[in-house]
Image 1 (tube, rainbow over the protein chains, first blue to last red):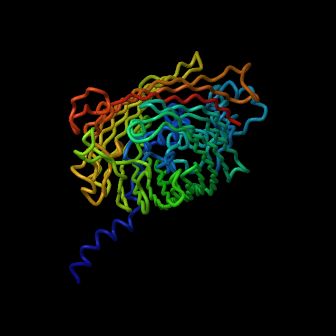
Image 2: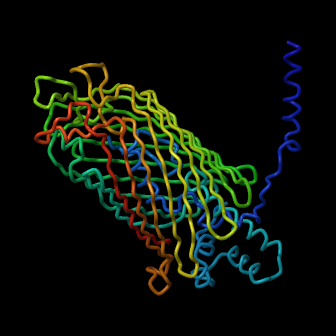
Image 3: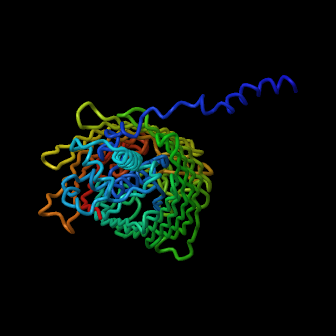
Length: 76
Length: 430
C-alpha cells in the first residue's frame, strides 16, 4: 500500500503544480492572421461539404469521422 | 463572448466592410485603426485579438471547432447532381442559418434527391425506376462563453423509406483557444418498406457517437482528429437487392435470391486532417481516414486539396485528389455456390473489394458590389468531381445475357464505372 502511495506522489506533485507544468499557449491571438483567412477553413461551404459526405456514404461502406458536417443520410 | 457578423464581414469582404463602416462595431474600427498605422491603444489590441481569434476558430474548424463563435449567418441555394453507373441523382438543397441575438443560431435545410435511371443491379434483376427523397433538417446552436451546445432534427422521406434522426452536440474551446474538443451523439429510427409488397415492413435504428479534437499547431498549421463509432440494429439490407448463386438448371447458369444481412453492425472510424498555409496566399489540406466494422470491412482513404485565391479576380480556385480502398464484407460474394449457401448473403457492390479515385476542381466567385443582392456578400460557386470506381470482385453480369456469349458464371469481367458529381450554388451572407 505504501509503495502504491509512493507511485501516486509524482502525479500529485504534477497536478499540484499544473500552472507551472502546463505549457503556455504558443500561438498568441495576434499571431493568428494566417489562420483567420477563409481559405484555411477545412470546409468553407457546409451545404456542399454535407452533400459530398452524403455521396461518399452512399457509394462506400465506410461512414463516420467526416468532421462536423457529416451525418446520417437516411438512405439504404 | 460572441463575435458579431460585422467581424466576419469586415475580414471576409473588406470592400463591404468599408462600405458599412458607419455601422461597424468598435472591433472592426479598431482593426482599421491598426491597419492605418494608428496608435496601438489597449482598446485596439483587445479588439484585434477578438477579431483574429474567433473567426479563425470558426473558419478553421467548421467541421468540429465551432465553439466560442456562432456559425455564419448565410443562405445557400444549391443544385447538386450525381451521374454515373446508369443512374442520375440530382435536385436542390437550400440551407439557411440565422442568429437570434448573439447566443442562439438556428438553421434549416431542405434537400431533395431525385433518382432516375437503372444501376447495374436494377438492369440485372428489375426494371428502370424513378423516385424522390425529401429531407428536412432543423438545427439550433446555443453559445455560452466558450461552449456551444447543438440540437438537430432530420426527417427523410421517400416512398419506401422513412427516417428520423435527432442529435445533440457540445463543443468547448480551451488552452488559450488553441484547442477545441467536441462531442456529438445522434439517434436515428428508420421504417423500411418495399414497393409492391404491402406485407413487408421492417425497422432499423442507428446510434452515432463522435469526438473531435481541433488543435492550432503553429501560426500556419491546424490539425483535427475525429473519431466516430456507429451502431446499427434492425433491418440493414436493401429490400430489393438480390444475390446470385450457381443454378445449372437455368440457361445463364445462375439464379437470384434476396440478400440476407446480420441485424447488427458496429463500426469505428478515425480521421486525421491538417491544413497548412503556404508561404504565399494559398493552402493545402491533407486527410487520412481509417475505417473498420463488425462485418469485416476495412477501408482507408486519403485526400489532398489545394486552395488558391486570385484576389484581383475575386476568385478562389480549388483542386483535389482523393483515393479510397476497401476490403469487402465477410458475407459478400459475387456468386454463391448454391441457394442459401450461407446464413448471411450479400452482393451489394458497396460491400465488395474495390478502389475509387476522385479528382475535383472548383471555383468560388465573389460577385462585385454592383451585382451583389441585398447589398451583402454574394458568391457563386461551381465544383465538379470525377470519380472512377473499380471493383475487384463484383462482376458485370450483363455480358452473360448477351446472345452468343460463352462466358461462364463467375468469369465475367470485373465491373467499373465513372461518375460526375456537380455542386452549383449561390451563397449570400446576412
